[in-house]
Length: 399
Image (tube, rainbow, N blue to C red):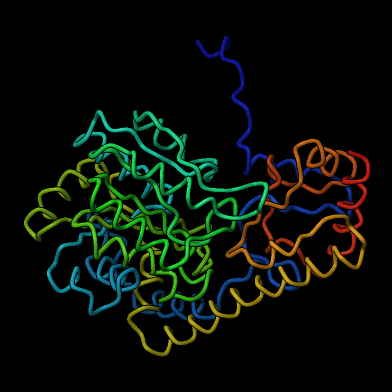
C-alpha cells in the first residue's frame, strides 16, 4: 500500500533547519526557523523557567491526566495575560480557555470548532501570512482567501487596500489577524488602525480569529494587546490563539492556548463544550509541563517580575540587532535602503531579497532563508553579521 506513495515536500521552514544541520560549512547561518538566539547564538532556558521547573519538581505529587481543556488556573492566567485582570470580558465570565500543545494546536482546535458551527465560512488571511496558516485551516476543511496587507514596494503596511478588503468580507466569514509582530513581514498595525479594523468587524459581522504568538516581543506585554482590546470593545465574539514558545522560551514544551470569547457566560459555556469535543478526538488532553511552568510564573509575583525582565531583554536584544544589521549593511556598502528593517517588530523581517538571491545565499554561502526573503532577525549575531552582509552584497551584485 505504501510503496506507491511519493515523498511529501519538506516543510518550507522546518525543512530548512534540517538542511542547515547537514551542511558541513563552518560559516553556515540559519535565518529560517523562528527561534530566539542570544548574542552568543544560543537559545537559552529562561532563569524564571528554570526556577519554576525546580519548584514544580519539588512539589509534584501526580502524573495523572489533565482535564480536556487543561488546568483551570492555567486558563485564568492566560486570560489575564491576554486582556488584563480587570477587563470586562474576565469580570463577566465571557471567555473560556483551553490549554493546547502549542499555538499550532490552538489554531487547529479553533478551526475544527468553527468548521462545526460555521461550515460554509471562508477564512481570510493576510497576504502574506505564516506558511502554516493555510495548511492548518485547509486540513480542517476550510477554503481560504487573502486580503491585502504588505506593500512590498514601500516595505510597509498597505492599510487602505486592507481596509477596503475587510469592508467587503461577508458576515459570518472568519478573518485571521496577527495580533502583533506580523509573521512574516514584521509590519504591524498601529492603535488607530486596530480601532478601524475593529469597527469594521463589528459593523460587517465577520468573526476575528487572532494569532497571538508573540505577546511581549513587539512593544511590550500590555502594549501588544492593542489589537485584542480594540476588537474586544467592538465585537461580542472572537477567538485568540496564544503561543508561549517565544515569550517563555518553551519551544520544545509545546505550550499554547485557545481562548474563546462569547456574548455571555452561558453562550461561552455552550460554545466551549464543542471546543472540548474537537480536542477530545484530536489529542484528548494537553501535556502538563509547559502549562505548569506558565501558571507558576504568572501566579508568583517574584517569578513574574523575573520573567518580565527576561522578556524585556529578549525584545530589546532583537530591536538592537535590527539596528546593528541596518548599520552593517550600510557599512558594507550593500546597495539599497534597508532602514525599514529597524522599524519592523518582532523576530521576522521581509529582507527585500528575491528567491533567486535566497537560492544563491543557500547554495553558495550556506545562509538559509525562507523563500520570499523572510529572515529571522534573532538568528543574526556578532559572529555572523559581517559574513551575512558581504554575502548579501554579493547576492545583490550577482542577481
